[in-house]
Length: 329
Image 1: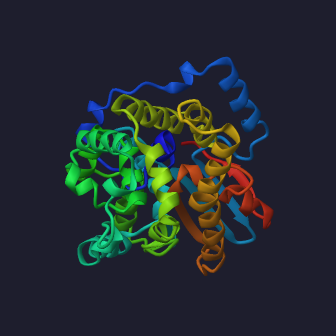
Image 2 (image 1 turned 90 degrees about the vertical axis):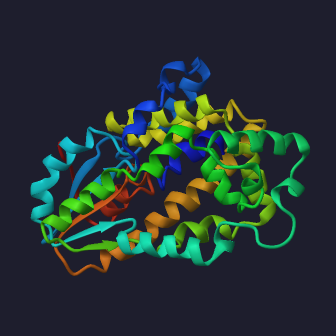
């Protein structure tokens, strides 16, 4: 959904110099009075809303939980430098995807075209009205995707792509790295093993199994102007470096709700369903992986959106007896 995909599905983002070409603005400064009221109501008493680095301790186990930004940013250099002693003292680094999972993803895209492309049956052109397709085609071309190729994308995957501005698409092509990859590189230098919290195809399972009709509806709502997409990403980045990750999703919610042609109740239902799939279900699965580890000094580096709220990993760790302490970042 428009800003939703840009804010919470910056899953594959990376890049370097092209980031400077993004000219979006922080949308928090443009919220209406009603949007601000809605946002503050949703954020009231939110668990672990702030802080990108926490330590969880229980008996002899010490977990350093680091909320990351998958986008590259020069400010990551200082963060990694500060985290270097933490990584050097770790027995294990847990991340969303290691290099092995990324290779498996690349291989699947190369060898299993149906993962990304419609192989049989009608194309997206046939599943949308002429007006809807024209808007989608224009948005795809602005991101360097020819119309004939966009028509054959799996709709859930194209939804993710169209939520991103062209400047970020350029970043992806340039091969830079977000904080996750920088942390993995530092751990490798220190001789610390790295393991994945989930299989490489988790996101494909989450979105690819939705009925095609639902995917098409999400795709229709994912078409956003370039400027709006840049603003969404700029807002995400600003909130991250403010260490206000707990506000990201609800900021996206109140902004996007005013932009889409959907009844507010229906919108909130769809938004909640997305969060359940993207964050809650994965966090629950990650808790099992964390609990199964034998090491006692573990660094966990995951997207910052996974940290806060009643179903965030910080609250869930606290619920099973961990003492939580915020760290400098």
